[in-house]
Length: 357
Image (cartoon, rainbow, N blue to C red; front, side, top):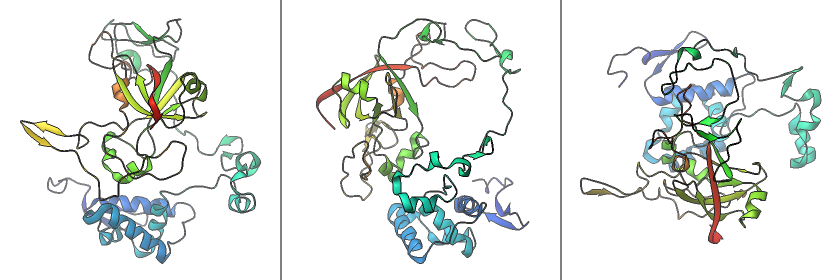
């Protein structure tokens, strides 16, 4: 479409390399495969993929993408020498730095139990002298000249340009979460959420490959909170947010503090083929399996791979977010930045009869 509109930045000669040579940008592969090549050649280039690795790459993509995978189109995006290194990066899901110099030798000697981070000392790649090796290099403003130009559309007051500790409030000033004040919540567990590495947006759940890495989003819960509710790892649970309840699976872990529960967002879809939809009397059924064998139920804290579940697996974080009392059918928001407030929901959790998921 970009080319049909005769816009600049695409077509033959659109990409300029470090040597001044120009390359075409006519397909998505022309852009994204070159990005993988840049990663492969950063600092010390990665090793070439062996013939067997390249066969594995081809078989995996042909199985997963079917007719949508064109190996030659991928290969044309880079030179033959670059292609072997691109496969090395893509087969591993990226490029990863050793935590300390000589880690490979230490791992060979000590195995998984080697505490490399603590023993690295001056050899650690985490620091460059007294400073972090990878640090924020841009300016950080503790006073913003732009913020006080805006006004709170309910009170008419200007926003404070300085950082401060404040209660989480509804549009009309009512307290949702007491931070400075002593306001308490009806439900005891604060629900947080995060974006997982394998799911960037709700639409990425369309990919069965990504859903295989995480078939659904279990609710993380500290053992202290789980014991109080007779909940065990992998149990089928109900999450009560007041305005709505959803069902999910418990993941009991010390990786989250007592009083807080959390889950990855991007699951629990209802549209885009996740469930049957009827429009004007015509029903479109949900998307069926992708040629896989029937999926197996995976268990949290286990490394056993699971086959992709449906697009509707898990629960949607949005369904358990609180509404703004003053606005009605709308969620809480950060009035300064304009984004939705995603960490101010409080829930309770109970084990459903039968427990096991």
